[in-house]
Length: 217
Image (tube, rainbow, N blue to C red; front, side):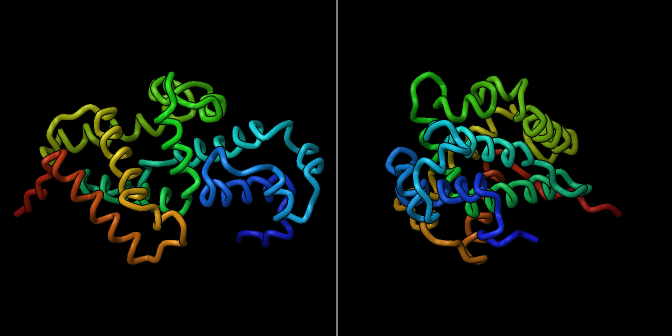
């Protein structure tokens, strides 16, 4: 059970407020004074917990990386296509219920050099590096195993896990902000989440040429 905001540690309350401000103002437009005012504290009180604004954003990015690392780990399902769909549904829920991470990822992709320093420092390296080592490597390994299982079952065509993730993740991020970002600015309804889940599954089905499993008997 999640504790009420008034009972959360101050460090966590600061991060929660920063995430809210990222959604409303973007990664670079909010100030620590905005955070302090909302939490009814003075800016120097924030510095008791974090060294700087950058330090706060690194910690928010660490939250992002930790939650992303848990993706593509669905309940055991006998058919790869069903398992993949469950994983993609969970990915949609993650992004739609944590819109600050959508903005963080978009800024990261638009930054020369392979990623902004906040996410790099949180993950211990770029996303490219994390596919082979680092906190995101287990997520990538689970996705690769899932795609290979589908290939062996003749449900998926052969495709590199990195290519699949690149297309799916980029498409989902753009879907949530274009032609407008209203899905980020309000808590999504279950119907809105399901609509995006159906859309992403349709895209994945086309990419992998998913076929219905053959019936036994």
